[in-house]
Image (cartoon, rainbow, N blue to C red; front, side, top):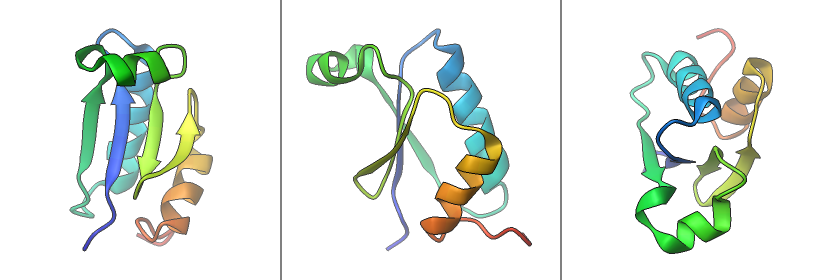
Length: 87
């Protein structure tokens, strides 16, 4: 089963847009899907993450909040077996 990538977001969040763009660039051509979860649609998610989005979760483990440089994102994806530097 491929690793599950989940990003907690909300509409109008520029940091969320930035992280999503970086994820899509890093994963281009890999076939790995990123699932977005809008915290505005779930009260529990909203209470948990209202001041902390975006939150990136890989296989149920939180790996990043707020900002993540492209180099740090690639390192996180490589550690999860989702990206190779030579790809």
